[in-house]
Image (cartoon, rainbow, N blue to C red; front, side, top):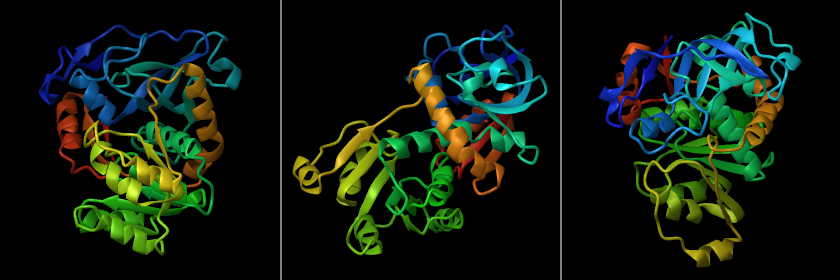
Length: 330
């Protein structure tokens, strides 16, 4: 089969399509013919040599796919055959890696049934974002009625977080870069959106919350956003850091942290043990996926590229101009 491989760490131009061995479904696994694969920032880090795949995962990138089941492995951990999967079923799946390929294997408990009216290019843009948002809202103990600030509401995770959190009953505020992207984020369901390129973000968020601040911040920026994020938190607020797009290190005002009785939480998804991933996907399957099936939550797909143009897809995502997700197709 063909896969988009990384012969050596480097810029987007190093990506190339090569023949690799076909995978075989093991106990509890599904063999899936890939129709589309989501592109994530973790893939960019892996390509650059900064985020190696976990043990046992294929060497090439790709954390989420959509396609059709080709075969079901024997009974075993992973709930493949026992969950009633059959060849021909439409599926979207979370992967530890290897999604940039014509075929993948995935544990059945990391897979979601795709409705007939959801194109594969959209389904492939959802598993990673849904798992990230659901698991981090749980980590923050966010509940209906609270105020959530999504930093980067126009990104691949943010553009799913906005409608999903609103459907969960939270008041959703978000940031984006530029007036057009702010308008798009508001159209996704944000109660208010703010241009982070304009000075005074903290004051604008506080004004929008009658001076109280927000209960939860979902942050992809990392170091550069730390001070503002803490300043925008309400008492007993929780800052959840899920990305490091703008740096790894920053000073933390512990006095303000104590005064607000605030918490700073950091999480990752890819490196979690299999049992934790299965539990997260069970949560997604029960609480988030029905909102996809009924059309309440749909992804924003910025562009679709063939495998042969994977380098262009990576450059596009690196440019910062993407609204939503970029997707690859075989």
